[in-house]
Image (tube, rainbow, N blue to C red):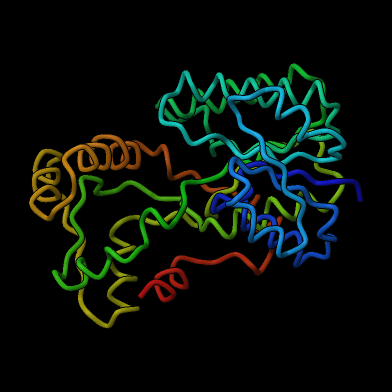
Length: 289
């Protein structure tokens, strides 16, 4: 196996991918982690993984870092400015081409064509850029992380006995970050994924009604899902201590998109890649609670 290069190696997703690569039998010296700060790469070095400092805003550093890569896992950037993110992604793609990378795997967004926000357009633009290089690619179109929904804040919902949203019927296809990292590691260690696009989402999307029922089942406390007008949900979130901006994004961005069906499409791609390692919603709730 040639050298595998992972960008964002000290981030949550990139770090998990590297650990899964090691667990799948990839030798540490065949893995190179791209880090923005040398200090942050210390934990990877302890695993025997080579680290190289490079930055999406520094094309020359990227070309040098990607040299010799048989496969490159390109983890999408994290800046909130869509234009800036496209510019950074163009730097990565150009550097991969100039460095002669053998295969690009890119963490895109699941069903991006049907999602109506700027981030989806960033991912589609990046996919098109990668196609222009004529380098074999694999688009790992990731669902929203389950951790955005299932986290310690659920204790408050359980204590109150209710979950309030403005999405009465919408379905949710979120999956865990760990499952997505494992899928990336599997593809990186196998052949036969050239020029494929995988929609890595929950094969069994669920509603907030179902989610509340599972919260009740796992916690042993009754939790009901109550729907309200968007403005009322925003108000209640702010009163509960959620920053006004975040409350607005959650209700008018996330809940509206869920109700519109943008985050509810199913696919078997993730389960086909990782098999019985797939973590269902009940297990995630138990782990968090």
